Image (cartoon, rainbow, N blue to C red; front, side):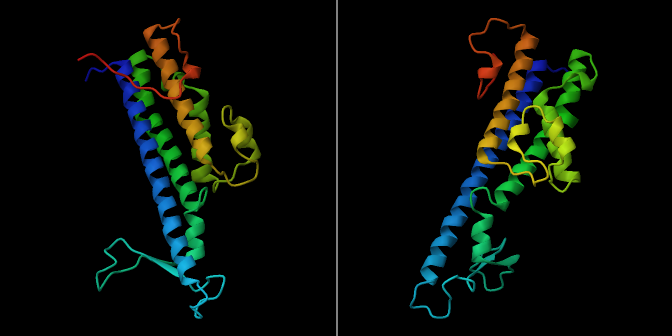
Amino acid sequence: MNEAFDDVIREYIDFVNRQVNVYMDALAGFAGHHTRVERQVHRINRPVNSRIDNKGQKVVVWASYEDPTKPDVIHNRIIRASDYIAANSKGGSNEQQLSQAVLVFLYTYWEHEIRPRLASLKSVKSQEINSDIMGDLRILRNIILHKKGIMLPEEHKKLKNLRDMFIVDQPIHISYESMHQIFVLIKQYCSRMLFEWLGVKDAPTQPEDIVDIAIQKPR
């Protein structure tokens, strides 16, 4: 199958944008869960309800894949409301799980699908298609999957673009701002490859100034 170098880059940019969309939608969902349950806790914890203490420890949340109105619904978990709120809070465990999954997915698709095809089109080895940001994603992927998510000193030293985001000997914590920066750095790298492939040298906008990118080809 014949394909163009810029088509492969566009495919990866589209893939990155899908991950951005899922990430943003999921964060909105987490925020909605946080607000909904927090309001319920405040309502249940009114003084008139003597069965609940002022810490709300007896308030629980039932979560299910099924319709909760069904009589035989099976709950996949029952959790304290305080823990549920914490998990769905900004920067909480749900957001961290999602962020790590997205980063692993971004690198894996790049490494096993996009990078080999770009190398083939340039008639070079895959190792010659490289960048600082994709190298950093490789390190994060290995830490997430093989180091229990702990940023070890030797791994921290290898980071080139993302070193300031993480603390040595601590679990990696990826904020919303950090995720946005990672998405931008990936798109800047894709832009740099495009400029190089097309021979663009005097463009009014340089890759390092780009925060988003779209490729439109003539029909």
